[in-house]
Image 1: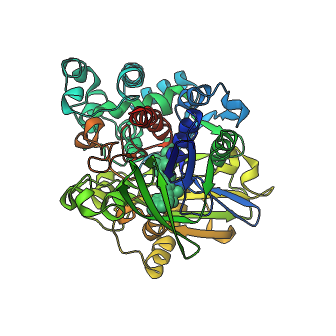
Image 2: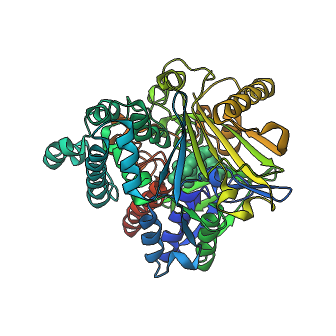
Length: 495
Ligand SMILES: Cc1cc2nc3c(=O)[nH]c(=O)nc-3n(C[C@H](O)[C@H](O)[C@H](O)COP(=O)(O)OP(=O)(O)OC[C@H]3O[C@@H](n4cnc5c(N)ncnc54)[C@H](O)[C@@H]3O)c2cc1C
C-alpha cells in the first residue's frame, strides 16, 4: 500500500503542498472544511457577478512560474496572465489622486512633483528594494529555520544591515522622503503583510519594488483561476479532495502514524496517515485540534502574538460601470496612524478609514455582466471586534458614504448584489483565530525563525505550512512554504 498523507485545508498552501507530495509518489488526501477549494481565495458567484473573495493582487509572477516548472509544466497550461498598465490609483485626503503605472519613468516624474529630488531618490529606493528582493529570494525565503543561529548568523549580521532587517519601515522611508504622499505609497503595502509601517522591518520595502517597478498582474478570468489550475494539477497527480470535512482532532497513534478525526455531514470519520500537513490556521490547530500537552505553543504565546488585521469586506455588484475607477484603487487618510492605531493599539472600528476598492471588471469582463461593475471594498480592522449584524450594517452604510465622498463617485444607488464578510465570517469559514484575515503580522519578532515552526515538537509525523509559517502571508509566500515543507515531510518518511 502506498504511503498515505493527509493535508488539511484546500487553500493555496494545501493545494500546492498536496501536489508536491503526490509528485513524490505518495497517496495524498486533502480534507477541507468548506465546500469548495481556495480557502481565503474562494469564489462567490451571484446573478452573473463572480467575486474573488480574497486576494486580488498578483505579484511575484516568477514564484508561480517556478512552481509549475517543478512538475515539468508551464503556468500558461493552467491559467493566463495580463500585466496591468495602471498598477493602481491612490486617493489622498488632502491632495489630488495619482496613478502608479507600468512606466517607471512616469512614476519617478510623479515623485519629483511630490518633492524636489524625488525622482532620483525613488530610483535609489527601488534599486535598494530590488536588492532586498533578490537577496531574500536567493537566500532567505526558500528554506526552513529551526534554530535562532540559522537566522542570526554572521552573514545576516553583516547582510542584515544592508537589508534593513533591524530597522522599522517608517523611519527608513523617512530617510528618503518627507512628502506624505510619497511616504504613504511606499508604506501602505505593509497591510499586505498584516503589519503597520512602524512595526514592520524595513526589509519589507522590497514590496515597493514589486508593486512599483516589477509589475502588477492579473490572471485572465480572475484570481480563482489559480485555484482551478492547482485543483487540475492535483487531479492529474491523483490527489483526492474531500470537501465539507471539518477536522476536529489530530494525534499520534502506533504505527508510527497520525490519526485524524473529522466530521462530515454530521458523521464522525477517522483517518490514519503516515504524515499530516496542517495547512489551515495554525492557531486553531495548536489551540483546538491537538491535546494541550501536545501543542507547539502555550496559550500565552497565542495571547501575546501580534495578529494581522481582520478585514471588513463588501462585495458589490453594480448595475452600471464607474468610469472614474481603475482596477486597484486605494484611499489614504492624512493621519493614517489613527487607522493603524485602531488595528494594533486601541482596537475599534476606524472612523476615517483608509480603504482599498477593487474593480476587477475593469480588467476581467467575466467578473460582471456587460455594462456592470464588480466592486470589492476592503477596510483593515483589528481582530476580535464585536461583529453583529447591526454593527456591520451600520458600519457598511458609514463606510460607503465615506468612499463616495473621498472618491467623488456615486455607488449606493447602483448596487444590485451585495454581501458583507467580516470578523465572524473568517472564524466561521476558516476557523480564523479572533477573526484574523491574515494570521500573524510580519513584525521582526514574527519573521523567519520567529514564525511558528513547520514541525510539531510533540506529534511525530505532523507538519505545518501556510500563511502562519515562514515565509508568511500572501499567495506567493504560501507557494514557497509548500516547497519548504514538502522535502521535510519526504525526509521524515524516509526515516
Ligand atoms: C481579503 C483578503 C485579501 C488578500 N489579498 C491578497 C492579495 O491581494 N495578494 C496576496 O498575495 N495575498 C493576499 N491575501 C493573503 C492570501 O490570500 C493568504 O495569505 C493565502 O491565501 C493563505 O493561504 P493558506 O492556504 O495559508 O490559508 P487559507 O486560504 O486560509 O486556507 C486554509 C484552508 O484550511 C481550511 N481549514 C482550516 N481549518 C480546518 C479544519 N479544522 N478542517 C478542515 N479544513 C480546515 C480552511 O477552510 C481553508 O480553506 C489576502 C487575504 C485576504 C483574506
